[in-house]
Length: 155
Image (cartoon, rainbow, N blue to C red):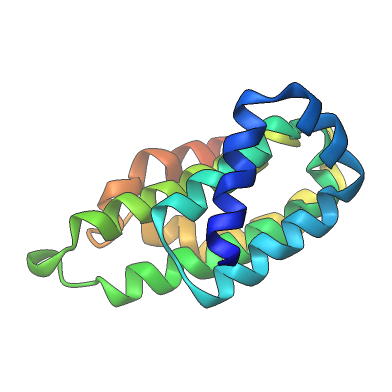
């Protein structure tokens, strides 16, 4: 039920500018809800919905960047660990992994150059998932992993 509500919300954000303004004061609560749902399940639609929220509220993501990157990184590492055998690689899992790394990159892009004090913490959080994206098991998300490296280096 919460998943459907989260996806419906992201769909509204794509099409209704009034909803964007209405949601702005509760953004922190919405992001906490997404992070809680991500603890329970991992799948592409939920990650896609979160990407829409990050894109919509790009200028307001900074206070949530560390917690978002932490949860996204944990989900990415879990997914890669559960799908380590390339011979049995699940295409859907690969797409979800790529979506998670894309969401991480979008969070990094949203704070790009604006909040240098949180970059050391983000580097520590993202070190392991970025390394995983450069392995055979993380091959579907190598481009996004490299983009995250560039974002961290140049900011």
